[in-house]
Length: 436
Length: 172
Image 1: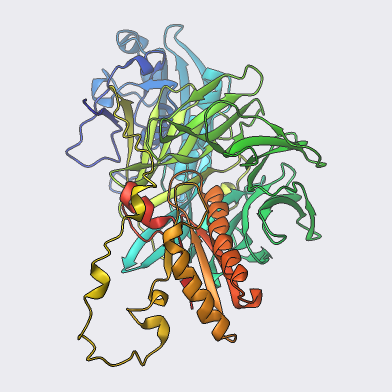
Image 2: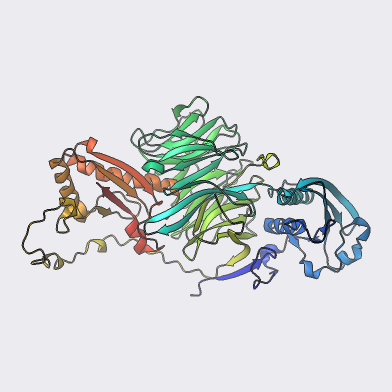
């Protein structure tokens, strides 16, 4: 039997030269809103343009969301950057519903002023417009904020472009040797920064709700420990290093507690730690493997993985403890669940016909959907606006990151040049790019 | 710290269309795993000039102690019968050398979630620990650690590699 076709939709600016921009109209993209984002004009010295073209970043963001279908730049009949230069007939002729134009001007040493305008093409009206001072370092962040504003204005839901992802990379450095790093990058893969590097495994990164800290598991000194590290200072503290497993940290929505897995009493159970007091209380007590806790957004309950029924399935327990109730019933293997930001859905790893894939479960309707098409997909998490899921996948034996819109329409890949990449987690909204 | 801004090769929008995707769906063949080549163990005569092994008994290739890795079936932590003699030999060695300690590493194959696999690896390490204790080894001589799927022995992504990765390793 024929195995699979892969059709790649390539996004312009970040691709190798031989890759052409191909807009493939598939069933999945039919509902996307046609929009045009004109490259932003540079008003400064021609020889010293900004390092990033703001309009291109905005356009790529909107396209990745799956909700928009940006017009390729080479199909534009005109490229205005100021309101008075816009001729709406140029855009109506191309069936573009919304138009974004803008410009970047010098604004003091190392500074820029970015202006943009969003238009309704058929009404011929400006919908919104902003003037945003920024710096060379924050220019991409500003572009992501513009994409967020456009996304929210046109869809009614907040965007999640000005966010980050944390992930783990592994590069073989020799026989039986590898370099494992915990990194953070912008949600589009730019600006990767290594925050921990080790010869021993690093696992299970988890953002604090304020986006300022990451909890993770490190096997340095041949002992698994749970650490909490401040993202912007690099300061870190070892939270637990008990005998046995110290794993699967998960922050409570208020950031005061950390749920985690410890096997100090003989087998893996979920515990809740008061982070300030360092006090521990057991949440589950069972002979089975109980692990991978995740908090409901209201902080009142947690889900976790347990094989108390024979195979791993998802269970839910009140934060006060007490009996756990089974949540997942579809499929013989379900693990590593986490909640959507509105608390209505879970995403998890499920086994379907021997393949490990990402699924969502609607907690009200019980609708269970397999969202990915890989063979060894794992570690799903929702974007903070709930519109995308990011997860780890494998292509040709290499670990890659993948994302799928929660409506299943758009998939994307983020690949490392060398080595494997895995365990992606999307940051919450409130991270501090303005304070960098 | 150094890293390249070009570390991300590309952001590739892709639509995967699976047309009748083939599923290998291979069941773990547990019965076939214990096939042994009974002829091979007698072939070392003369190689050592009749002399007895004088080094560390753990390094003697003709000793059961030379085997320090035992393998497990998919999602299982039961000691397979073909490894009972190996573990008994290690138990006897530890019983005869009460000052020696061993670290039992538990590992899992890459399938499924990582933290659950940490739990599975611990189960395997504990199964070995309990076996050794049942053979009289003092519990203070045995430490365990689970690496889950984080430290694979084989790098492939197929049944053969997975079978090599579902293991417990005795580290002296």
